[in-house]
Image 1 (tube, rainbow, N blue to C red):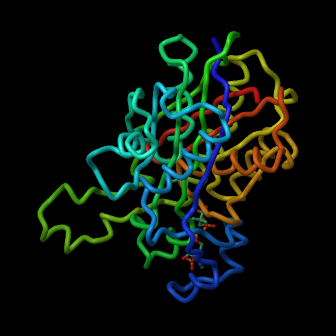
Image 2 (spheres, protein in one colour):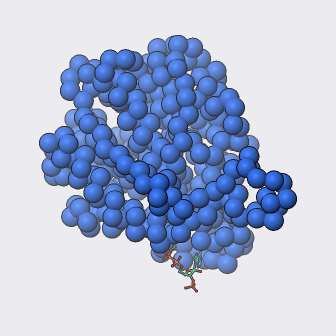
Length: 321
Ligand code: ACO
């Protein structure tokens, strides 16, 4: 069996914060942010939550797919930034959309999360265990960001993207993914569930996202081309046969560097971080949905999805549209 995407959807908060707005909060400028990251604005949750954004994206994806909520066997939500710990976001989505027959769980793998959710669903579908799945990346990173740290707060935004998958006769693609916990300190954030209140009060930054930007940059530029080559080899494909390479939307310079390393034209690497910033596990499905709705994706095209981020984790999948 093979897994195919038959519907996509996305949702972002209404409030928009552009680079000029940010320069009122921290010592930065529109020029610096554009040049170093490619980001121009991002959407920030006020009324919205990880659950509400996930539900909106899921409903759009289901509508487009023609699959009913009752037909969905599996719901996976990738998130690291929900305001609620229990119940999980996936079970909340199930309740709100009426996916009464699905098994639902959350997955925590930061910016690689959507690719791993895709690979989880693919494994179930290609082995015939389930026939349909709804996978979602939903993040409200604005709650984790240190709004006094100009090195990180300029990068992130909130949003959600979703895809409906179903199984079909045929041979599916094999995935590639890796983790390196020994380098996890490069991107870290403690949970308020740990430690004494006094310690939390005296170390507030520990409870907000902290990043060694240059380490993450180097890691991404080295590992992403490698995992893309690996997934191609595993499936007996050549780069020239791939129509689109959809990378996690962290930074324009990372995308440009990966394009150079792979010696593939930048036109193959769609980008939308200018509009949304880095939305972690939501960035790939938001971009996929935009491309789908703009009719840039044609039947039979081959697409690579590649994610990378905290853990450290990274992975790539091939799919045929
Ligand atoms: N505005 C103005 N100046 C700034 C800002 C800012 N927002 N942020 C940092 N600077 C300053 C620094 O203080 C430093 O000044 P100094 O030279 O006087 O000390 C100077 O700019 C250079 O700082 P660097 O950190 O070396 O800047 P760099 O070119 O590395 O860019 C950036 C920083 C954009 C964070 C880059 O390292 C990067 O993109 N890294 C990858 C980060 C990333 O993509 N993370 C997410 C991936 S994983 C995930 O998605 C969770």
